[in-house]
Each structure stands twice: as C-alpha cells, then as structure tokens.
Amino acid sequence: MLKFLSISAVLVVLDHATKYWAIVALKGQHYWPAEGDLFRLDYAENYNMIFSLSFIPMPLVNAMAIGAIGLLFYLLYQYKDQHILPSVGLAFILGGAFGNIPERLIRGYVVDFISFDWPDWLFFTRWPTFNIADSAVNIGMILYLGYVFFIEGKEQKNKPAVSRVDSEIPPAS
Image 1 (cartoon, rainbow, N blue to C red):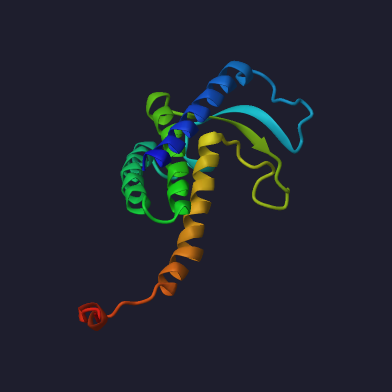
Image 2 (image 1 turned 90 degrees about the horizontal axis):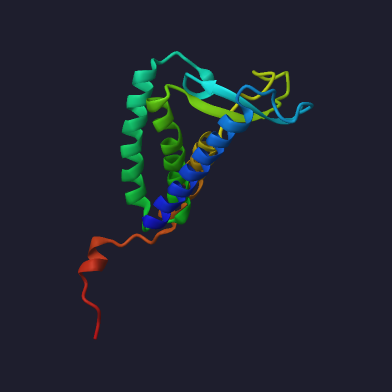
C-alpha cells in the first residue's frame, strides 16, 4: 500500500509546485503563449467546485471531499493485494484530492492554470481551466472505473468455483 501512497505523494508535490509556479509566473499576467488558441497557461482562481459549478455550498463540498478521502483510503486498502490498476487509479484520485482540498480549506479557492480549446459546438467555448490535481482525479477515475466495469467482473467470472463438496473430500493418497 505504501507504493500507492507514494504515487499520491508525488502527485501532491507536483500539483502544489506547479500551482506555486502559476501564482508567481502567471498571476496578473496575460495568458501564455499570447497567441495560444489550442493550449495556454492562464491563471484562474476557482471559488466553486468542478468546472466552477456552484449549486452545492462549499462547506458541504469540503465535508464530502474529506469523507471521500476516508473512503479512498479504505478502497485502496481493499485493493492493495489485487490487480494494480484500481490501486493506481485510487492513488491518483487520492493525490488529486490532497492537492485541492487543503487549498479550498486554507485559501477558499483552488488555483487553476491549464486551459485547452474545445469545439464551439459543445458546451464550452474553451474547456474550463484546470490543474494537475484535477487531471489526477480524472485519470484516476478512468483507471478505477475502467477496471471495475471492464476487468473486475470478467476476472471473477473466470475464476473456477470451488464447491463445498469438493473442499470437504480429502485428497487420495
């Protein structure tokens, strides 16, 4: 389990280091590169939850996030000796949570700085600005849910069933 927690720790350090860089290099500046259409680095402060949605009060969002961390630790413990995919996914989610939650609790907002263009015919003219922690949560969810929906059920279905009668018959000598 320690190797998976170390993945989370590396993600937290990377997230906080890049957010510090964004504060120093990008805050109060025009986005970089100035002619960036597809990709740009653009400082933003997100006072709401994901995609700046605000239909849930932030104290409730923070309480749910802290509760989710407990659930993540439990799930990580449950999967630690099984397939590596869900454990890595959970470690990414945990790293992302520990990247954003302290900021929300201390600053009241999360620093975002990565921005991509998005086809105008979809919901946004640009994809909402995000950070490393947000990316880690999304990658982790893809890994974890991909395992749960596409691998876990098939692995359990392919295991040979041991009947009670078979387990009670002593081996022939």
